[in-house]
Image (cartoon, rainbow over all chains, first blue to last red; front, side):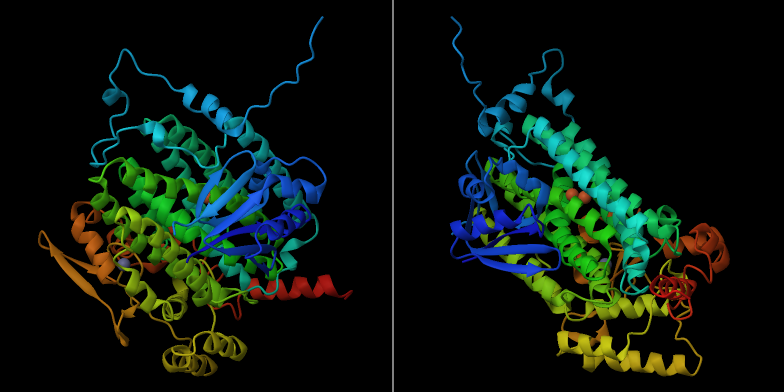
Length: 89
Length: 505
Ligand SMILES: [Fe+2]
Ligand SMILES: [Fe+2]
Ligand SMILES: [Zn+2]
């Protein structure tokens, strides 16, 4: 097992995104650090457009994530509906 | 009757294909080898460039849109910082030294990365690669500019910021970072991608920007947090590109594996040595600390680096050669390098200091097996001398490692009481190294490293050892930019201005 992670700036735009990530990844651990939030998960983390849209109440383009993204760890795969981070098992 | 047809929005994959691959063409009046002359000499075999994909599938239109938004956010905060005496909100004037290292050693590296990506974007034949490198080239020049711009606010009030470009080129602790980038930029395009994309982006930027920027936030420095996070939002893409490049090479041909492994060994160690500066910034230069260098290494080195090498094992990659030696030095390197900065502080464009009791207690809690045993006694001794009015200074010049250019201040991996020193003779000349890792790098490419420009020999070659003339040449103003923080102009100004800002007298 390896840890994948994503870190986002701590601000008003990312609050609902972090909530969406928690909903979609019950295994994820959210670490709050000064000015940033780092979310760790075992092997795999999925970020879903639909869940974010439900949280923010408007349509959301997953590429908007780039604005508040700080760093990530894992192989990235992205399409219109989701962004997945994973390590080979 | 006209039918109203909703305009179909292109899917991400389709858009990426149209706006990336479809922009390429086959050359007709020159051969591919003539158009891309540098892509084969390193020995990397590529059979299908279309297999290179940006996993984020970022296209230029989206790139401009999001980058513009990042810039607007950045300048809103930089303006607020300048308008609201942001330079007085930092926790302590000592913190400025971390910013000086950053501006002198790291920001010029961003500019070097910009030049490098402009070059490799031209040298790689694949269109996906060209577009990704072009974006990264623009990102990196943005990083250099925003960092210099943000820190120029501090230059109005404090010393040590004014001549960062001279300091970068000529000052002994900064040529560590300079030589890293010069080495990368004078390598072939694939090696450059491992050097910057893998070593600098994947291994270093996490350790540099993330805990350090979080530390900047903790120390009240909104300007630095802002440029740090703004830059780092691009770095996530850069790391992904670096990782993608490694996987691409390994998937294209089994013959690529030993070449890639050799570069991973080399650039891991080169990057790790640059981290010597970063470890010192984290453990000593942040008045309020978020985490120790050791803790940051656990997260981003051991856990994340370990995960990466486990993942790459499916291609036959093993962890880099210097991995075990790196682990052995984690609990020592920041202390050893800070002692180095302090004893040569007459020759630094930043201030260093003797850690306070409170700092030392924190260090011994974070480094329970090493600090009290090896480093506290030395600081105590230095403090005793200072109390007697004798600042501990080493007027001998540091012997520099021919590869990484750090002074040879580190200890043997298995014996922290023995200073580590290696040497090699090549064509009748003797060369010195700080470690086995640096010696190996040299011995693999001696013709490259015998040409390295080293700052200490330059002092003798150019100025016959005249330190005053050397100071002018590196734009160091004696008595202003250098020496102990205690008693410095920076300290006096910071305390006086902060007093004015928080009282009415
Ligand atoms: Fe950068
Ligand atoms: Fe970068
Ligand atoms: Zn070295």
